[in-house]
Image 1 (cartoon, protein in one colour):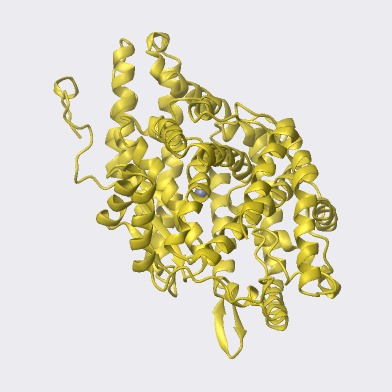
Image 2 (cartoon, helix red, strand yellow):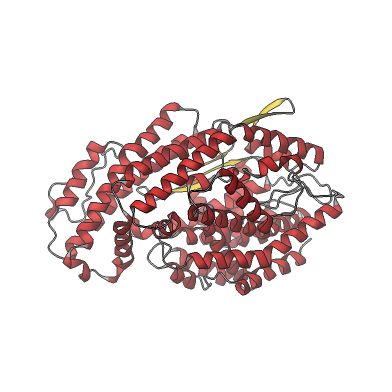
Length: 575
Ligand SMILES: [Zn+2]
């Protein structure tokens, strides 16, 4: 740390060799920021700038510890380093942020700050409103429970066809054209899940009661109300979400069921069983019995072809993608000991995006990689912004960056396929858009009910879950597996780890569909709209970001219906 604050100029506030995983090293910076004299709005700006620099270091350390753990989940030391950071550094930091927020917001000079700081100050005031010191240990307890649920899920393997497989690896069998293989694979996975059902239900019970307590401590009636504030949902309400669910029920659910009926008819299935369709993605057996799509043999091939694909779209995107490759911050191959799923994590100090995924050569993997590349483009577009608070963007808009990239690259999928297979991949992806929205309504409705009724019993939970599934789900025959249906919500990790984070995907999908609709008329305009909006980072409100991309933030039936009509038109042009 530099002691001579007045002389600092462009010199950095934080020493380069400082270790942000040790509180004793963070503490002097924190003390200085909390005690530095404030005499004018310039002093407030200086504190915000230095606090931002400190946050960059700490955020990057947390990211690197998380990345190390997820790339090597069997390594005890990496897991304990990450947990140590979560349990010992983050709670002290949130106390520090609260004290600093109060110092700045309560100072009379705050009114003289330039407009640039408006959203940052709004966010600080919001944090102050909901912060309670007594919630810090509850938050740590919450993280411990969530980590346990992730460990339980990560450890699940099944014996199948003479081998041991992780659950992500079982996808291959679940997507088989042979119905008996699908059935066997599905039952193997479900029987394995049922072994841990009881502990996961207990963890969830504990999480619900902890979360309700956090909300009450913070002065809210329900955890739903608390989370709408904590997630800074200033621009839409609970009622908007409910309207969105209704619109999805009216527009997408009948279409989804129509697609299911066509499959049942063409494949002569008799009735739809849970192993005949993935209800979240719409993935099911091929109507013509063709083998699953194989867009690439290995990760290098995927990366090379994606570079060509993005260069074909624009030099700007092509160069950004090549930057990712050159910076060597991609970990894409699936391997034993790697956490499931995919994510993009922006390293705030180095200003470099890191992409993690488990590619096994499937079409879904290609879509994931394009999705995460969209997040990485967003991060790179924002890297010119000075403050960490300006570079972070609302989640709803982050997913516009990634989901629109999936749609807007569709024209270019010929890089991976011949003409027939490219169309097949496009149709599958567009069907996926129709299937995902009802699933989003399912998960979001369920959470609204859970946290409005925190005292519920497990029986009530099962019965509400099933009635929500009846409303938004596929009509299918569960046979003796209705006992699994009761707890099948356990498969959706967001319910444990990131409560209420789900409707964002739906809000973003509507944004993404609009950008894609623009692209279908005018490719250049769509890419310009995309970059114009993405480079704004967090410096505008959510509706303003939508406006910057020349799209509309909406929840109603008419809006949804016109976009889904476009999807149907596009589907009819293919096949
Ligand atoms: Zn995403």
